[in-house]
Length: 305
Image (cartoon, rainbow, N blue to C red; front, top):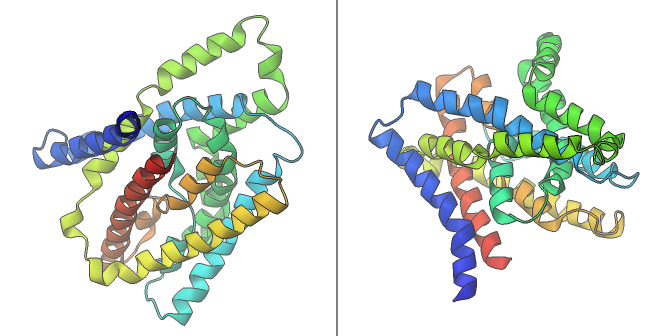
């Protein structure tokens, strides 16, 4: 009975807030503009507070630097596999290969990790996320934008509040500044500020995700190839990550953070780059389907813990 209650504590809030998001769409309690505003608050205000705190309080060593580097390499491999498999399996669409790479950690990963491991520092997930953040804001977006827009893509990355929050957190954490400020009480003040600002992150993000979920509009048969492409590549590279962690890093990665990262859907920004309306619909449907699968896998992880 106790294990069931613990499971409900982790899983029920996620499904409840997702359901509230769906209800807000069906009952017109929130408009599209209102949900976009919620996303902006979550991504540009609440999430940067989470990121700063995570990287400022993380433990740094020469070996820990390998974690984001390995994730960066794995994300690059995922994109290469995506292009190769789309050609071999004859999966059409210029954006189809990109389904295989990148993770929506910002709009989903941090919220789920905080629910899955409420007593642990989110820095464990942040160190795994750093490599894929570097990948998404460089290789991923530059390739999506095209070579002619490399400068524009880099400028966009530098204008993102989450990127500046990561850089500032790294500055405080990697230099030891955060620890040095503890005796004066400044670190505790920073903790109070970031905890207060980041408190609504999970609810805001999951509410927005629920609003965008329309299972009835997912053309399951048509997008099945995209979903299988994503799941196959993610499973393969998760296996590679686990092997590297065990035999190279000595199991220093947070296993739950690593597993959660690889069950997340691709970046939600992907449909923005679709020039053809039909392809935009297919990519959006695939993202919705993969989000539902991610939530189910999250529930299975909660059962296993």
